[in-house]
Amino acid sequence: MNLKLLRLLIVLVFLITYCIARGQCNYAQADKFDNVWVINQGEVICFDKQYNKIGTYSNILLGNPSYTDALDPFRVIVYYPSSQSIVILNNRVAEIAKPIMLTEKGITDASAICKSSKGGFWVLDRNNWEILHFDSGFNQTGERIMLDLAFSGSKPFFMQENKGVLYVAFLGKGICRYDSFGARMGDIRLNIDSYFSFIDNSIAYQSKGEIYLYNLDSNEILPFDLSIKCIPVKVQGQLLYFDGRKLSVNKIR
Image (cartoon, rainbow, N blue to C red):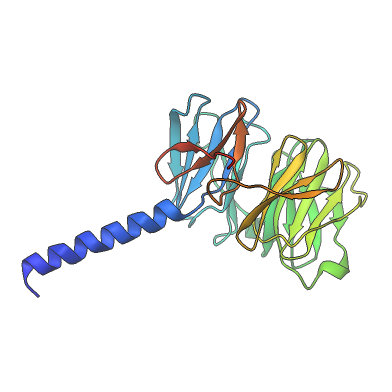
């Protein structure tokens, strides 16, 4: 192969890779200070309310992170499913302590992790089909929530607390809810296939490539007619998403 052809192939591969990356939707979450935390392949990026980059974090030894939880903006957790580990970052996007290896805590299949409003963490242990509570030092408190066996045929893949209620998403089934005492609340039956986010008093989620809003007051499901098929975050009245390079406005058509 001559040098000119090789250079052309390299350029084509770069352009294809760039276009694919630009077309992908990245996980994004806003904290209470309107900072936006983004997962971009193997990297965690945080932007301030003026859309300026605060900092980035990556750890190639742990694999690619799947999501963050910024319920506590001073102790943001980053979950790495392939290594079954979490990292805790401060609001300057720096490690607070060494990574926590869940296998060392006796958990070999953590399907989802999130912060708890009572302090510490919730960890969904798929092997034992239960959700365990850990304190801020990542020691078990003894508090646990037993999952409904009727959902055992479906994959739990995302979990988040909002206003004291724990929401657990099951692929293609819906979302189970638990109050602050671990008591089961009414389930939300949705054909959900991605993580979700809270926008005002609704849950934004994806189903078969389309974005929908589930209103928590009326139980109504409405299509979210956006200019791009990404689950946005709402900051200062704007719906934002990460386009592969920067935060962009996700306009409603």
